[in-house]
Length: 220
Image 1 (tube, one colour):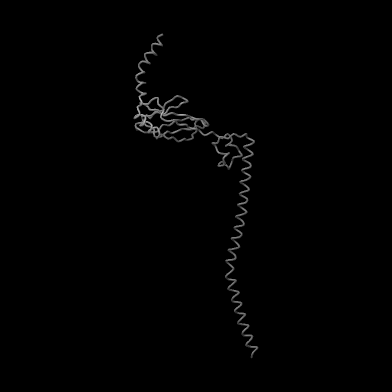
Image 2: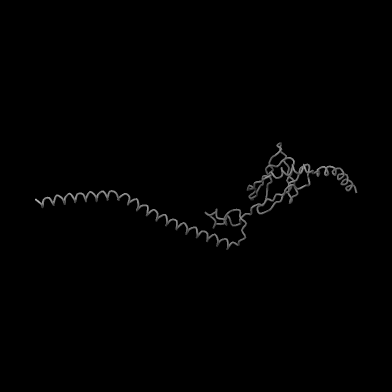
């Protein structure tokens, strides 16, 4: 009975504050809505105790709004000295989806101004496999990828990709060798063309001179 009385007393004391917190005029809502729309976030990966987590850094959070996690029922406030600052939420699990609502921190306390959905990338369970060495940029070998493949299917796709990549490299090598051979021939041609041409002209002139001298002798 005493416990019920305490709860009743606390409820009576808090009720006026709750009513005040829910005051949300059109002017309040318009002002707070603009502040909520300015909130952005970035995701960063980090390691802790050998586990991979993400943290979300919410920027543009004013003192007049709060960020509420619908899963944990926790509210995050800007407790810094600046009117607008950042809020960092840590230990976000890869592959999970987090839904946040932005409310007013004083007025419009229970009025959702904006909903923010944060999708955390899922870790590719095969990214560290031996077959992925040297091709970590390939889609199926990237660390964060939501693959719905069995291992045998994954292995087959990666090996096919490797085979295609090697064929392409071989073709590029052959093409480069052909280009180099053509280039060498052109260099040799350009190098020998003019000296040969000039030499032939000189020989032709010499033959003409000798021929004319021979004709003169015959006439005498």
